[in-house]
Image 1 (tube, rainbow, N blue to C red):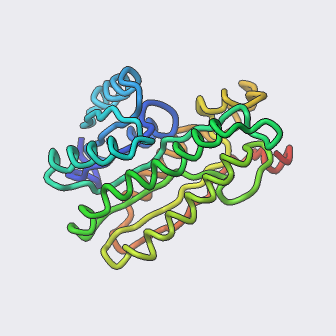
Image 2 (image 1 turned 60 degrees about the vertical axis):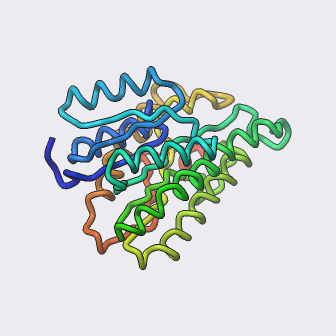
Image 3 (image 1 turned 90 degrees about the horizontal axis):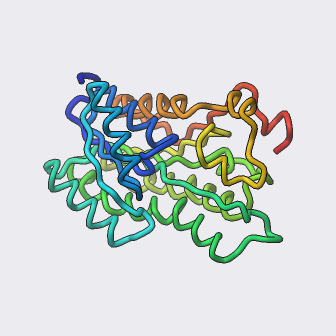
Length: 251
């Protein structure tokens, strides 16, 4: 498959479903070789089959992104396999817990959310930045959230705190490594109809999900960023559905 990203290598975490899968499909459609990471091999194999059926190039790296040593080892293997080249890192792994309010937030739930939403981004980014600096080029696209810009009650302290941290952490990449040709964007979508919605205390209805952003909407945004000229950095994107429940229902 040819496209603007022909010859580039992209690594997408959380790629087995939702935003990660949509981002992987979009980057592959633009010509990138896409490495899919996630904890479960079966969804990754299914995702890879979709991409290959559409003419895209892909590979799989099964990985728990909350394991710092495993992330470092996987990144080293990918860089060796692809000639020390990793052009685009898209951090999509994310989670929340049904125990999401102060009255019932457990320490275990807190650690799980922070480890997945924030720590994993530190691990993957730290692992790829040296190679990006050596090539003087690279994109780090971190999926934060509407809850990383605003303060919705619905999503809870662990999720809100971790997603705000992602926005701040992302901008430090631009501060330090823009001079090395590296760009970073915190992508902050409002509600997206993905499986994470099922972890809410009251999951949205089918009609409500139909009015939300869809995974491909965010995937197309990832592709838009990846295809920008090398001299252009969009530091943050906030994207929402036109019919935005965060406004309408004050969520």
